[in-house]
Image (cartoon, rainbow, N blue to C red; front, side, top):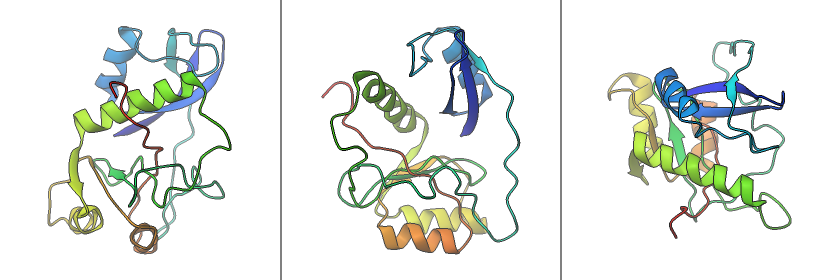
Length: 173
């Protein structure tokens, strides 16, 4: 998966995760990428600084200091090809004090659908499979599944990047 900083026609900036650059081009061209601020669908990639990690340290700037988003019991996690990941939540701590705004919920539902469509579900074997991928014992690919807080912390300590994403109910439920 690839992370892009995006900008809408009204100059609002936000970020998004995509299977690859072709997936972004296809979705943006079909106007399926939407600004969370104004709802605009005229979206392009914004200038981004590269994320350069220090040896042995996971880049966790996107999640450090923020509460864990809501997720099903046990959490879900996702590691894309190359080992960098959008990651699901573990533990089920509330993301907000109130209900999610409709636009945010819709975007998270689209994100969930993309993860489910483009990544392999590995269930409770998430941490073990992420380790196998990091050691080169398994093909690198996008995966998602369940990881406890202890598993997520252990992966972090081992230098294996994962990312947490809020796991909302699918749009069709």
